[in-house]
Image (cartoon, rainbow, N blue to C red; front, side, top):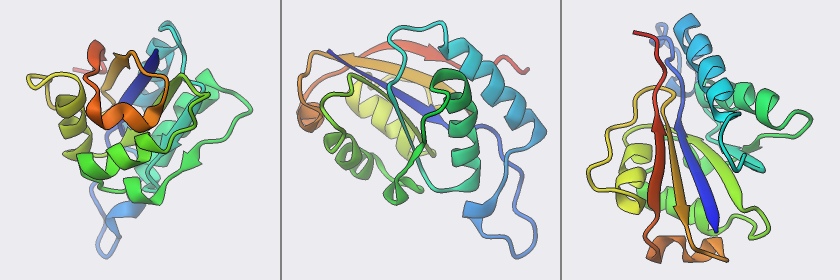
Length: 162
């Protein structure tokens, strides 16, 4: 059994004049969202044994907040191809995950992360809100088979920040 947590980055600030999109930090609301949802995920099972993130500042910061609560002392694996990746690119990253990791969290961006949840788990899955978590499961031994396997969307949660 493999468990995949797909997590959209928390709310970010709008870019300042001349600021590259990848350098946008989390807003205060985004920081609160990430802390709330990381605490929320600590109550789930299985917990991810690995965290992978896009290199964008907002996505790495979101992932590191989760890592501090879920996997203290571990590192967040930064995957450059996840920056604004579409579902196909994200599937390629999943296919290369180590098979000894049965639960993994991947932090990314819309629209790719929402498309991936729809593709793998449920065509009627909601669009991922900032810092939403989709938990998907599949009866797999090898991550390389993820693209040809139907996952079940077992869990979906969004921040409660009104």
